[in-house]
Length: 364
Image (tube, rainbow, N blue to C red; front, side, top):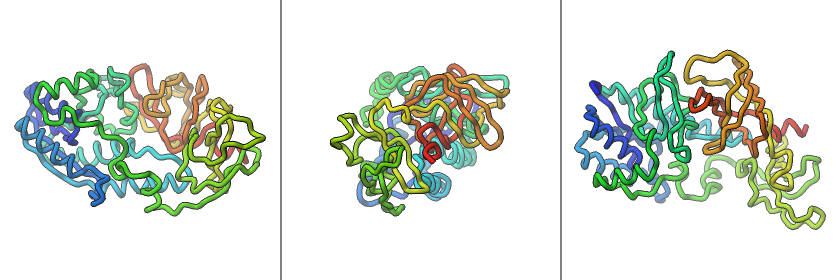
């Protein structure tokens, strides 16, 4: 390939096979294992096991493995915003920020100090040439596609990225790992965020934010019960509200429709298909474009969560943010999550969702 490639070796099977494929292609390859959280002593974070797995893979492939901690950068650039979003009553997506700020931010900078021209990862996504540089495309395996999480990449990060798994499915990845004798071929996929791990989410969040109980109300202001803290709830949540079995409400389940942070009120509606759970218009923060900004208004498709089907939409924007008109309603849109914009298979960029139908301002 004519250039040194640094592969981000996490300790999982995906990054291991990414390294395997690059090694087989004859790349001048070294590996980098980064940790983004100070490992705790209660066993919830798998950082130590991840490092040992990465070492085993690097030994098997015969490649140099570097180790670095970006825990301080992660806390400052990702975790701080994670907490701020919960304080504001929103539902953050730290994975999107981690890719922008850490993996293709400070990690890419470190890889370049190691002499690397490109940074390879185990993401399921594809890259293709375009008139303005690299374009980000969906993975061929739609179920594993992770382009949604890469929508905020800086331009320099996208140009330097390599995604060797973009045309593979997960079964093939595990088969390749097994056939090559990689010790992680049957290691379970990681779930959730390392700094939370398998511990109860409420327990973790309560260690950083003070929970403030408040009322649960209908959109009309009728009190239904008491919540333990807005940060423990998200739009579309059904379980854990403690308001079932009301004699005058029928048998349909109750769902979170909005969080009014100003009044510390959780707004609930009855029935999965309640109109206030379906959004047709979104307001976002500033759009981040992966390439040159297109002409407005833009007709494209919009995806508001991982693995959700993209919906045709019309987008208008200025420097402050965007207004997105969806062709069909989308269920349980959560402010704080991200809206990713697609033109067919290509991810154009995206923005954090500030408001949608069912958000608090619609009740005041």
